Every structure is written in C-alpha cells, then in structure tokens.
Length: 402
Ligand SMILES: *Cc1c(COP(=O)(O)O)cnc(C)c1O
Image (cartoon, rainbow, N blue to C red; front, top):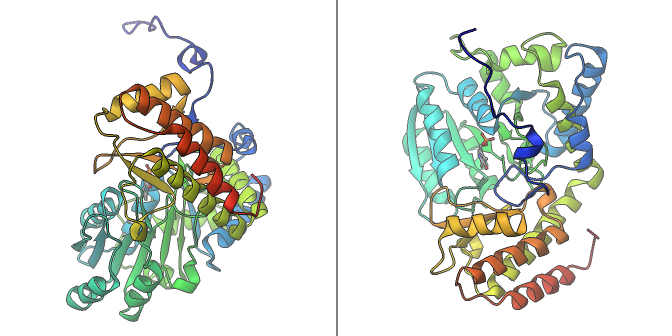
C-alpha cells in the first residue's frame, strides 16, 4: 500500500472545544435542538416519508416567503448555490442585467450574471447608503435590463436596502425580472414576495432560518417560471437546472440524491418559524437588534451604518480605536467562548442577529464578551453602561418573552 494510513488523527472530540462556542457572527448561527436532531437522521430520498416532508417544506416555505408560488426549489449547496441557481436559470447569454451592488454579496450576484454571459451593468451604491429608487429608475430606463439583481441585507457591510418593495415595482413596470438575495434577512424582517412582485428570492440555511449550512431554498414567481420554461438554449449547469430540480421537488422523481438530513433539518427550522409566526419573529429580531445596538453605543463604541441604512440582521461596529480586530475576536472566542465576525469589506466587526442569535441571554453574553475583551486590549469602553442600556432597551419593548 503506497499511501499509508495517516498517523496522529485525533477523534473529533479532541478538536472541538470542551464548551461549544456561542456563534454570534454573520453565520452560521446556533441551531435549535430539534433542528440538530433532525439533521442526524437519514431516510430514503425517494420514499413516501420524504415526499410528505417535501410537501410540508414547500407549504411552510410559501408562508415564510409570503408567496403562492408552486416553484419553490431546494438546493444541495450553500446560499451561493441558490444565488447561482436563480441567476443561471433567469439570465440567458446576451441578456441585459442590472446589478445593484452594495458590497461583497450583491457584487457576487453581478459576477455570477457575468459568468452566465449576461450583459451586466453594475450600479454601485455609495458607501453607507441604501440603494436609491431614483438612481435605479434611471438605470432601468437607460440599460433596459431583462433581469435586476439586488440584496435585501448586505451582510458584508451591514447595509439595508430599505426601498426594496419600491425598487421591485419599478423593475416590474419595465417588465424586468427581479432577483432578491434574502440569505441573511428572510424570516428576520418583512419580505413579501408576491405583494412586492419579486421573481426570485434566495435564502440559505445557516442564517435567518437558523438551520444548518449546505441546504438552501430558492422561490421563483410564475413569471420567472414562464421565462425558465420558454428558454430555448440548454443550461450549462446540470445540478442547478431548475427544470431538472422540478423533477424532485414537484414530480416525486429523481434529479440527484437530495440532502435528506439537511432537508429534515430545514423542515424543523421552518416549522419553528411557523409556530412562532412571522410577526412575532420580526418583532423579536427588531427588539433584540435595537437593544444590542443601544448596548454597543452606550459602551462607547460606534455603529458603522447610519440609522437610515442600517441592517438589523447583522450589526456592524467600527473597530475599537487602538485595538487589533483579529486579536479582539480571538480573545472573545478563547476567553468567553463567543464568536463574532471580522470584516468582508470595510474595517468593522460584525455581530449577527439572525434566528437563535436574537435571544436576550445571548445578547448579554455577547455584549459582556465584547466590552470586556475590548477593555482588556486597551480600548476605553464603559461595559456597565452598555449592559444597562441593553437591559433598558429590552424592557422598553413590553411584549413577548424570550
Ligand atoms: C452569507 C450570504 C451569502 C452567501 O451564502 P453562503 O452560504 O456563504 O454561500 C449570500 N448573500 C448574503 C446576503 C449572505 O449573507
């Protein structure tokens, strides 16, 4: 045997920390017990039980996406695979595409459209601003795109495109298909696919939905599906071909072996959302994120995004003066077992408020870890003031318990 068995391989238990880390970064996020349990099960991907599971996943997704669409597909892959599925099925070679770019992830949509041989015009949104409907109206008139891509929440720099409904309407008036990346926002804040006239909504598992990474969802409108059905050319992608995926998701037939465990986990994540209901879930996210922001500011740190363009699902914080961001994150992780994220663009650190992250006890632990670690590394922060502001802000919302 020319290749020997590797030595020094440790069991997983030796690699993982004794105490699990609290995942408060920009994803993956903590998962509920039931999601974890479902993820440990393997069943027949084409059996009757799986068929029942798929029917329920689609029914619950229609609620979560707020759509009556009969074209909701699961993808074995990251949020990016769902992005690519939306893009490659809706952008045929030579199609004009208008990509609204706020940062890293929205630019990824533009890159995918270019790779799909679309004729892409990028509209770069100025830093710290939401995409402007006026600027987009002008670009729509000039470029006359067949497809527009946009992100609801730009996770990388914590910018929120708050005029999404209006932007979708402007595009629709010009007969332009709208692709929305809602990976970090779906189920954390309103997104009404049908009412707003969105043609493709993308989400991943490991952020807003609080499921596992690796299984994602994409919902297509009837208008989008018509465009997909009428396409004359053959897609270069086989796994991401929506018409082939339809075989599994709507015809109980085989496309590829579905990630059964991940779909069972997704089922449980969606069921917990339906149980909580969207209005209660949106309120919980808003209350927690606003309180976290109040705590951070009271501590003496600065939020990156101005209030009018600030995303609540991921909170961006300027790096405390005099502190090395990587050292800060390492310190928080080692000393307090709290993980937050560094930058994917501007020099900030980021705390997620998606799904299970938006729980009062997680906020206190995170604010404490951030404040205490910043102080230890030489920043001037008032940790007691931060904790007090967090407490006060949480109390000011009188509804719900957590
Ligand atoms: C995380 C994220 C993605 C990419 O998801 P992956 O699962 O990492 O592929 C895309 N868009 C947004 C807005 C995200 O937050």
